[in-house]
Image (cartoon, rainbow, N blue to C red; front, side, top):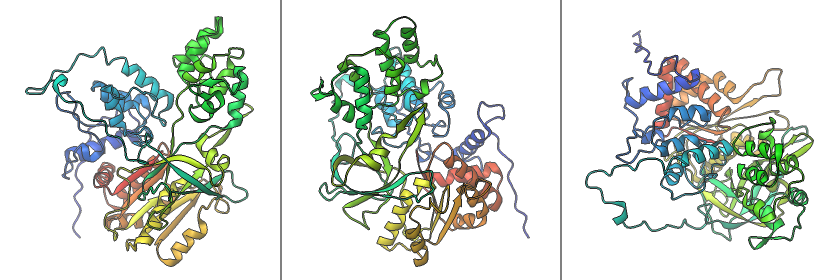
Length: 537
């Protein structure tokens, strides 16, 4: 037997670098693959999801902070010394979710060149992203102007690019109307969750989509919450604000959670003493009472009870109500004119008050059959079925992460794709949280679903997750990858996706006879080739 020669371990990121061990290993493997130090084909920055910088601003085009699981402080550390627009990119949530209407790199470029004035569009990044962008934005006018490259045409003489309006129904700025058809509870009695299969009729809008795309929904705030806020303001719900009644504006136009810094600035102007100092501190991102993270708009008004801002000033101080994006769980090829989502209703209690997820409970209980709502399709970038229908696919989607993979399977059935299909699904309890149980079992019986591997975290004494099932079936996972399978993840970015990627690295190392660094580089190469794709949130 010929003995395999294992190349020496290549260390680029030192052990004392300011990263966790997982981040250090990932960066080390990334850079090894980037420069081809392990003998593989070097990865180009663009192939790794980085956007190449324009010539002349001193940027190398790499984005090592582009990791949704990395805390913002670590991302900003990695971006130190980079051009302003790149530091702005690092401040964002790194999900490239499209919820802001851009990807992270384009959003940061647009802010830096002043074509986008809104600094609060990064919904996953929340207040910490908005605050960092505000801080960085203040540097724009202080930064010295970049010297133009030799032969460059002065900006003043260059013709302005015409504004291109997005196709109807293809962007948040240009939505269409869809009809709400139905909702069906997917959990059974005993579940701690409330998850719905939700269906829409797109036939009037003639909107279509491909599997992997996301669906943007313009939800409305809960009327009960709105009326409680109006009572705290001591105002009438018919008061006119921006050509609408106050109630209409609060239901349709503004976000009621979390309380934005501008609201605390407003409250500081109309109160005094210790209350004024407290409001100023909250506006600057400080947490004088240790409750800043729990303050939505209603809680802020209750905290500063007795302060009653003018309704128009109050509405102006709130953030706009953002559309919510959901992974599509249906196939246009299978059911043209219809679209479905898999939605967890978010409900939780802080203090004695129940809080509601805006869009999830809107879809789960407040919208009625036949109602119209504004929607759009967000095209997927780098998340979709392989071009070759014979390519095998491995899909890892616990909970509502199963949504796009239901779509993949329905699409492969409708198009007659011959590739093998393996789904890893998990949730809390098998008897009440097995979404689409009958449908998936029927797909397995018919042969469409080659393998169905399940993991239930609350059925036994020890929690057991999809990544644990992957490790248990590691040899078969490696065999599928060796046969050219594409691997997909959908779900939580900060925990599940990183745990699954760590499991994948371990599987490659163990069954592919590689060192940890080589396994990390192998996984990076899968990403480069489009064989490892993620839809995370």
